[in-house]
Image 1 (cartoon, rainbow, N blue to C red):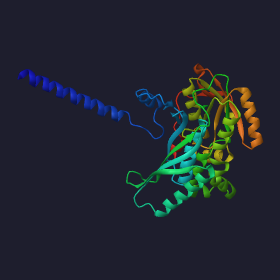
Image 2 (image 1 turned 135 degrees about the vertical axis):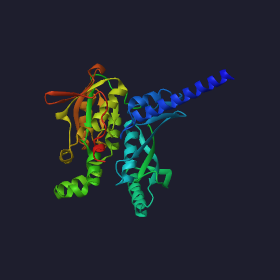
Image 3 (image 1 turned 90 degrees about the vertical axis):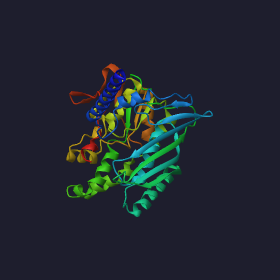
Image 4 (image 1 turned 180 degrees about the horizontal axis):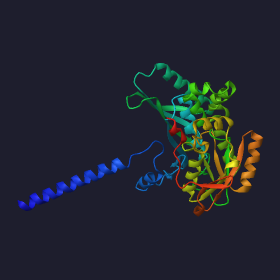
Length: 360
């Protein structure tokens, strides 16, 4: 009896200690806004069961998964829109289509989950589906399903998209194939989506300080220059031997480069003077003290390829009316991720949080 009581007391003490340790750990390790720490995700990915039909599975910075379905490669992707509820239908389709195009696939079928807070006006729902329908028509994508719900779990509308695409052959563009000596290209400029989101959310404040023509351009950023990279990704896939394609989204250009470097086990060296940043973006970043290099960057496309192929693609883009700039090169992993700013060299051992987190 005495031995059993001692064992029970010891066991109870051990369980209580484990609970206390776990609670203390939770108090210490609180998650901040933005993407989850990639080291946490990598640890989780390594524990997943394997499937031979998965050609490209989960990984840091992977734009989409690719699975082999009876000899046919299919690309799949899911992505939410959380920073804004304005133009939500347009955003959620285009953001997911971009990721499918980045692996060399054609976006074809779309499913969407729409979560609305209680008391949301019904008119918002009609606007959402009009935006979604227009985006589907422009990219020739078919809405094939989804889910809608009113729930107190969200404070404002949230949309989560799921895009399915097909590859024309067996050529997959993987963001883990960058090699030292490769050239890094960036289409359009920074930071299209971030600029438009700030305009939408801070419109009243901006109206008092900026000119009408400038505000009009910011309003139009969603479609001109536009957040879709499907056209430029499709042209690159068909025209040259692309090693990597990646659309920098949350965390901006720096996070996008960090993800490519991590996936490919390489370093990157960028020259700030070569990075195209829109005038509107510079003004809005100066006003709110934001770094455009770490601001939500959908609409730009990072392309990594050999120097000869890069020159060929730049020529093709010029003829197609697509703006593109050579911003840097891939270097060895030991050289890390760096940006040359005039005479200073800044390094990025970890991806930055998106600058929008400072505002919302």
